[in-house]
Length: 327
Image 1: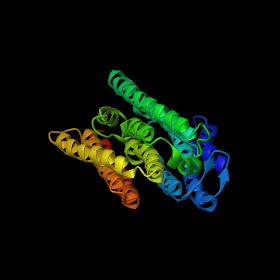
Image 2: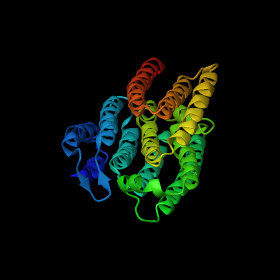
Image 3: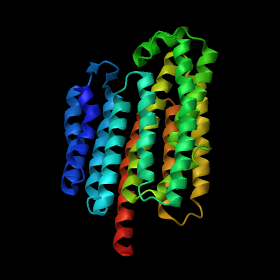
């Protein structure tokens, strides 16, 4: 059943290019997943396992995706609609995989998959500017996630190459070299922090939001940033199990405060509403990372919940108003 949750979003492809069926499946699939997932809490299948934190973000992602898919019904012309819904289905499948992954290697694979899928959303309109924004997003995201891969490999080596299962790694890191774990966490923070939008790694964020269509921007802000933040939550727990949370906390607090400060500065002088909301997302993710650094993961989860819902509604509302007044 857990594999069904991963593959379920791809059912959208059965609609081919029929607009009506695309909309119905794109709304019903995440709603079905939303209803099914709570019954699978605590179950495991191979590298997949659904725990409380994974369920929290899975339900949030499905709810937001269904809302965005419904909004997009009247936003896109027929030719644009199928490109959006197909790219969105790939992104939703990647997000599901990340939240279900109990293997650190699989988690990395699905986070990278979400990068590639969401790049299609950024390039949705085509043209020189979207191409430049997509290229910047892919380059910065891939460089960052490559550093994250090095961190994953280093963690694997530090536990003796025994496993990449998240639960087993937590039980083994107490005997690992602490200096090596510090290096690994720094690499992982830079790697996944690039996708979270932490300063000074956020250069892709405003351009991607500015060039993506409104519903895609809502997905980028409301769901994509959470995928990478979820990975940071997992590795913060590993550092805590190793007795090195003080070191992880210092990095999280520093990056969180810097991100908050510079996002506030970047907000001044912004005239384009998508760039304004993008820097606002950067600011809020800085707050979530800061809360995680304080050792308050419940507060970080609450803040990402509030940010995802508010920012999704802000993007959709602004896009709807612009569409009506710009026609």
